[in-house]
Image (cartoon, rainbow, N blue to C red; front, side, top):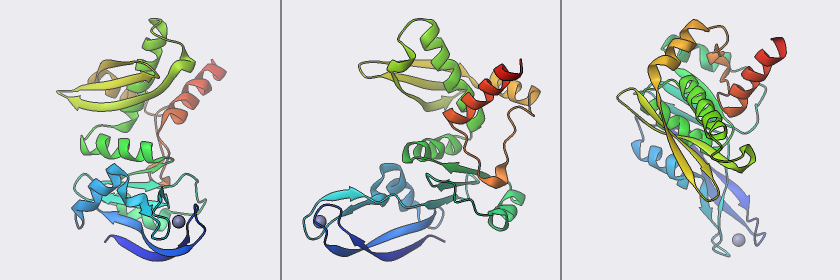
Length: 214
Ligand SMILES: [Zn+2]
């Protein structure tokens, strides 16, 4: 079930208190409208009734999609608590569980898992696209502002590498990446029940690790 609660909030702009409703969890089967509110960020957007300034309150949120079998935990910081009692039954039902450190990661994960794609393959594809972008001298690493998953059609992922003034799309076939993940299953293993982060920091840490031991 989706859960929300009222909290008293002090406006960061005018300093006056008022009540806002925030969501702790969202279940997309029960509240399909909330999916859209998550993707647009509206679920975190509030307006001060006193000074009418809009602002974001990005509280930790558990997002559950029973139809695509994934649970996302949007939380910039690892709470450090034991999640096993919550995670174990979900793992038994085949849910994929991930923590997302930012709203951007969170929205991207929703799209990836709704498309039925492995996010590990997506991170590999994003990494490959980034390297190709740099190797082909399309730009310098420091110019890249983001590398984003766009879509997956007929087994081909579309990845966008963006800089301030331009962007370039890469088409990356899914099969070879899934094969690589299968062959090197130890390397790409994640602890699903611990709500792992699977993002660019994670993939970079894997490659740094292997360089260090080579
Ligand atoms: Zn205000």
